[in-house]
Image 1 (cartoon, rainbow, N blue to C red):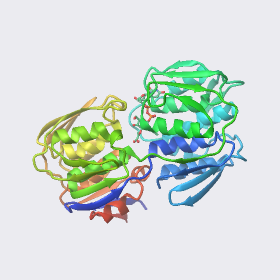
Image 2: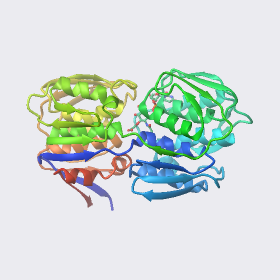
Image 3: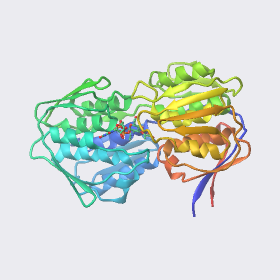
Image 4: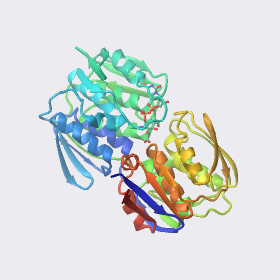
Length: 420
Ligand code: EPU
C-alpha cells in the first residue's frame, strides 16, 4: 500500500523550526569516516532515509554503526572488510559513489554498483573517474559495476572541467593517502566540501584550500578516529524560509548559517519578503501581497543553488508578473513545474528556463514528488493551495527532509500521512 502526504492548505504558520545537519555533507561524511583506523563520532546527523541506506552499506562492509542518540552516530571501521558493494541500497542514493573515493583511498581497490539518486537529467561521473585515473587508478565497468584499482596512488594535478561537488569530494578522499601532493584546480566551493575537509583534517589529513577553487592534499600514512559536528543544512533551511514567506504569519528558522544562504536571502529581499536575519536564525513575516517577480539563474556556490530553484518556484507562482528561472546545472530539473501546473500554476518550460506567470491561485490536487526538491516545492504549494493536496512518491521527500510532518505540524500546518 502506498503512503502519501496530504496537506490541507490555507492555515497560517507560526513559531520556530530548527534546521538539522546538512544532508549533502552527511552523505559524504559517512563514507569518509571509513578512512579512519578508529571510531568516528558524528553529531548533527539528520534523520533521513539516505543515512539509513548508507548505514546498510557500512554494515555490509563490516563497519560497526552505533546510533548513540537521535542525531549522533559512531562509525567504527576497525574491523571492516573491503567487499563489493552490490546491495540494493547503492541504488537508493547518488552519494553511494563516495565509497569509490573512500575505498580507493583506503585499499586501492573498489567494486561498486552504479549509484542511483534523483533523476535530474544525465548525471555523469566522468570527472570523478578521470580524477581517480590521474592518481594512478584503472577504471573498468563490468556487468553494472565499477571496478577501480591502483597498486599505488600518487598525487597529481587535477583540473576539473566543471566545478563538481561530488568529484571534488571523491578526489579529496582518494588522495588523502596518495604519495605526495594532489592539487584539485577548479574545485567546487560548496560549504559541504569544507565540512568534509574539516572531518578529514581532524582525522589527520593534510587538506588546504577547501572552500576555494584550489585544494591541495598532501598524502599522509594514517588517519585516526575523531569527533565531528555537521554544519546545518542550507537547503533544508532555504526550504523552510521560502515556505515561511509563502505560508507563515511569523516563523523563526533557527540553527542556520546565514552566510551560506546569501544568494537566496538577497533574492527574497528583492521580491519583497519581510525578513530579519540574525547570526544563527532568520525571522520571516510571510505575506503573498505585493510579491514581485524576479529572474533566477542557478550557479555553483556561492551562486543561486539549483536545489533551491524548485522550492522557490512554488513561491514565484504567487509573485506579480513573469519570473524566469534558468537552470545551468541540471538543464532538465523542471518536473516540478508540470506538477505545479496540475494545481493551477501558469508555467511554461522551455529548457533551460521556466517562465512562471503570477499570481495564480493554487488548488489542491494529486501530484507526484518526482525528485527530492520537487517534493519540497509541492509541500510549499500544498500549504498555500485551496483544499487538500495529495503528494505521491514521498520516499523522495524522506530522503532529505527529517521529520517534515512533525516539524510542520508543530508550527500549525495541517499535514499528515495516509495509506492509499
Ligand atoms: N558533472 C559532470 N561530470 C561529473 C560530475 C558532474 O558532467 O563527473 C556535471 C553534472 O551533470 C552537473 C554538474 O556537473 O551538471 C554539477 O554536478 P555536481 O557533481 O556538482 O553534483 P553532485 O555532486 O552529483 C551535488 C548534490 C546535489 C546538488 C549538486 C549541485 C549531493 C549528494 N548532491 O550533486 O544535490 O544539486 O551537487 O550543487 O551532494 C539535492 O540535494 O537535491 C541534490 C541533487
